[in-house]
Image (cartoon, rainbow, N blue to C red; front, top):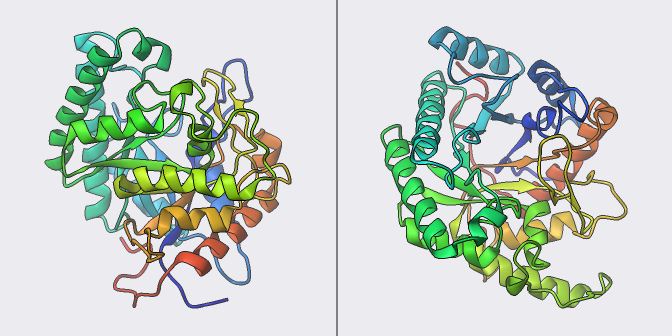
Length: 353
């Protein structure tokens, strides 16, 4: 063990929702996800917080009152945890839909930022961003790449301006199932065109792995066809190409594992499959490869974000309700911090409200 206390280690609660429900397994409640996070412990070290998805049935931004937000802050703080990044529920307003849809998208960002600001004021959210995507498919984007990219950029700019009023930053999730962010090169072009100081990128190691393989946008494939996964040198060089392009934009980061396949469940489109931290079929060396996101070209820590999060969407409920799953995840997160973290004197007690 070492004394690194940053970045803080978070667990995501939205995997209790994503891919669940109709045509799948039932959702897992927020309280259950919170309790399993709080119960995880490895050699006396525990999670520092949770990242949350502001979506039903966990939350409803349309009806959340100040009292509801205060109860949420108290509940999380009672577990000695903080809240970090939050996912805005923008899917009812796909950017590549109607003008009204885009207005709904921006309004959902506004409501999410308002909740985020209040949680900061309550002392339970000292860091983190608001996560967004285009809420639209790559297939829809491909119908008119130039025109559709313009719509995404314009809507993201509007959302950034709204977020700035609340002191929030927005992170666009890099995932192959979202139009305009389904390729690493298209993602960079989108971020450059938005050109707002509070706009950045949310990297998830499981999802960005699929960028290397050109899923949904083969012209931007980095790894060769029929790649031999035993060729670690070629794989590392591909990851370096990817992280060199996207690291400067990265303001939110998910530690994760992927076995090189896509997967979807419930209403969620196929995307990079999240695997358990100990999955023997995982293609990533999680701790080593996380360093390509957390360190710059010279191997120096970027310290671009104050916390990192584990995202395990679309795990079976039997896996997610097994406490050992979260202990294994925490153990992996600790190793990442040992290798790529730093120490700072604590300024504010964690979980203070």
